[in-house]
Amino acid sequence: MERRDFLKLGATGAFGLMVTASDLLCQISPVQAAELPQALTPEGALQKLMEGNQRFVQHQPRHPDQSQMRLHEVAQAQYPFVTILSCADSRVPAEIVFDQGIGDIFDVRIAGNIATPEAVGSIEYAVVLLGTPLLMVLGHERCGAVTAAVQNQALLGEIGSFVKAIKPAIKRVKDQSGDAVENAVIANVYYQIEQLKRSTLLTERLESGKLKLVGGRYDLDTGKVSIIT
Image: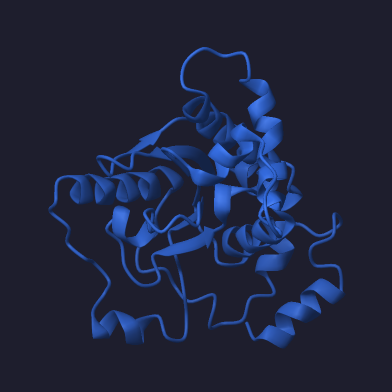
């Protein structure tokens, strides 16, 4: 789909409540609607993703889909098998920690892995228009954004904007025993998942069984991703 066509969809109410995900899919151009190389189910996509992380943890990466052939293959069409809302932290690059390649992951990265309107819109695009069967919200150990929110300190510029988006999650675990930041990291994943479920488009896919939504926690020390929801 060309940019002007996508903007046209928005102008005509493509993301309105009266339009279903199936309606949107009918408007995809032949380029974006290219046949998937593998028809993965949501569970199959999760298995593929986690097998890649296991290879990374064991220092046995295969570096799939990183050849020149792959580059040409996805030059005119993309069909990622997973959408990941992850933190912008430089130590958590999704393609590396899950041992995937070009065109495999629709990666939405923002400090604190928060579901801002722009992030949600990007995710809706990937899930509805590109048809990714798996959506993961990935938090990580010792997250700086979550730490800033827990400490509740004054921050410069627009840095405080993501702190504001995390604070509701922190309130839920403020009296919980244990490490305050770790508790907040987990709570924030759950909270952002709740925000994503407010999307009519994503909810439709979830209820139809075409989409699986999970939360994960990345361990900075080991590289291991654990499913927490």
